[in-house]
Length: 392
Ligand code: SF4
Image 1: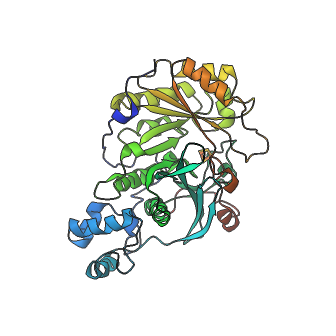
Image 2: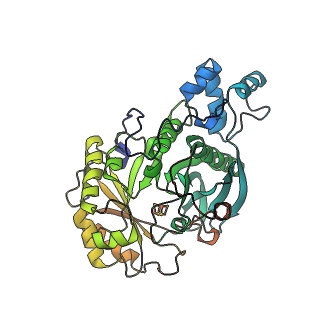
Image 3: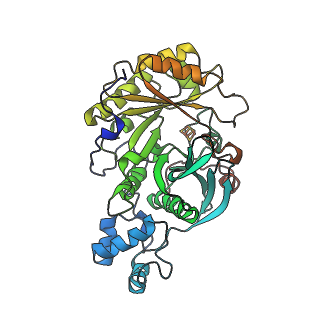
């Protein structure tokens, strides 16, 4: 029997007001693009509708964006509407600097922005059987920051440090780029996972607003159940404020034993049980499942006692808990991938949990989990700013 009582597909997602919170790292409304003409990717459908004097016009623009087309180009939307659009909004300035395709079809895109900051996002087509791509089930791994301040030991992104937060429009524009790439290849982009560069809750206000735009049925129209937000749980308050977010929640736990987790995930809140309690509060209030991710490293967090601790941590969790095990991808020389993934899966399943294993994808393009690091940013920003607060 599985723990919990609420299968993922029946989870309900409630909308809550968009309010900045005291432990969000951004001050003042971070989504207000400061230039006189706002960036279209940072506008909600309601806001664009006001700019264009009508929801029908805004809908035509969002229909183009959500199909991966560029409404600022000729023949995408009617000429009159395009002329009007260019007076009220502008496209997100970004450049695709590189495209790397792995042997399994996983595609890594290196993007750069006006200030030289750059990031990588990854398109991952599902596999039918061992090798055939399923073009109807493609996932985009989205970044929320350039670099990351969390310093997880197994993650190459951590070696960059935090360069800066992404703005709302930069997050949404990544998805637009992913939609355009999918369209070019005849793929259908169905799922978004916030598992790229950065810790989403360290850029909570911007990520939350981007989610609103991406899930608005008049906007990009992604179903919340097709979006997963992965967090290490940097602060108890930040976890509690996940209530109402239109996405599935995944906790990057990696180790349930506090002394091991403190080594792997040097987050400021070290109390694993307290964090589990915070996730339990959020999941119980909305009867939604919790996804738990564990990147397994040889001899570090893949022992029988590590799995026993993980099972004990969620023994009385109020809703369904689904483990997702990942064999660490190459990247950090001092750590090796676990050879015991199947054994760990058996142990968690025997303890009554649903437990899947995420197969490695995109390794030969350095596009797998924990392998995203932007060489362009590292060159452009040899020393990350001491003040790691977001810049807009
Ligand atoms: S695993 Fe995620 S939270 Fe940890 S350093 Fe890497 S990007 Fe940041």
